[in-house]
Image 1 (cartoon, rainbow, N blue to C red):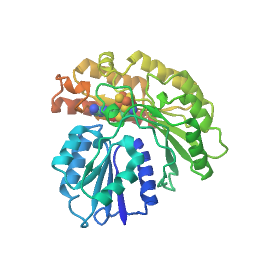
Image 2 (cartoon, rainbow, N blue to C red):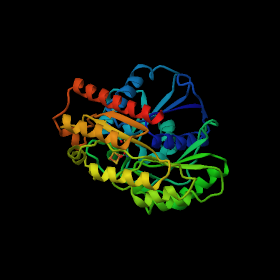
Image 3 (cartoon, protein in one colour):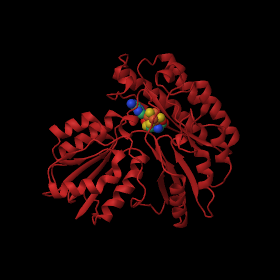
Image 4 (cartoon, helix red, strand yellow):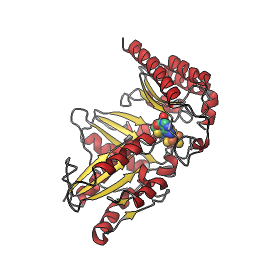
Length: 370
Ligand code: SAH
Ligand code: SF4
């Protein structure tokens, strides 16, 4: 039996994909790149923006119903945990015979076995507090050129930024035990992996303590560098920056999503910091970490964003000078508080601000590069 695994979205999904691949191999499947010829297709999906969801449903509609007779399609990842999506699966996308959310990863073999023995369709609502399961087989695809691997350290999110669907689909914040993380990192170092990423929706909320974990992960003998994703600006501070500066095994690279440069918008987003807080953290990080490379995320067109709010975001970019910026057009997600806000930009205004943002960032990158 062959299985095709397609992973969309963030690095947390990539890390989940390594576990799904591990479980598939342990169940005796052979992995294949050939989606049409596979006996089983497993889709790890993203729900952060509507666009990603629409595209994935388009895939399901247009060509997933073709392919090998008897082929089964499994939909997991963040989309699978959205009620609207489950409703669509039940009513319309009947080619999907199993779906379950990201909090339930470890039960995949059980769910799949049930599908294979009982047949029928299993559209499952996952619990949002299930602990991250230890001992699942992990099968990473490590590109020898890049030689990097992800290690999940925590999952879920309790921050409830007003625009974001993640807390609703990935469930409550849960951390892995430091011993389990260290064991995994040690194994990767022994295998000669050069770039090890510690992954979580909000690594600064790692319990008991992220800076301590980072230092401990950097303590192994070997030629490797650590990176991490994502840091929340509210919880990142001096202890984190000092930990980063403490070892050459921690890359001087910080991804710190600002989302906006306007205090009114940050407040409406429920981000828990002001523009001034953010800039102070950036100043401290630059002062503490030599040769620091900064990246960030920005959302354009949050409901109620005025021209002045937007200009505040542009001026934040000028002050920080990110080496790389991930830019997003606001996308209303059902069930989030921001989706109730009605003062939205027209598509034309959205596009116009987005283009101006890209232009400013492009110039900054050119200046940094040159
Ligand atoms: N936990 C991380 C990021 C999670 S989602 C953090 O807090 O930074 C990754 C990025 O997608 C976010 O940083 C944000 O910029 C963007 N994003 C999330 N929800 C969005 C939405 N509804 N519309 C547009 N962009 C969104
Ligand atoms: Fe979403 Fe905010 Fe949590 Fe990031 S911190 S995952 S943006 S709710």
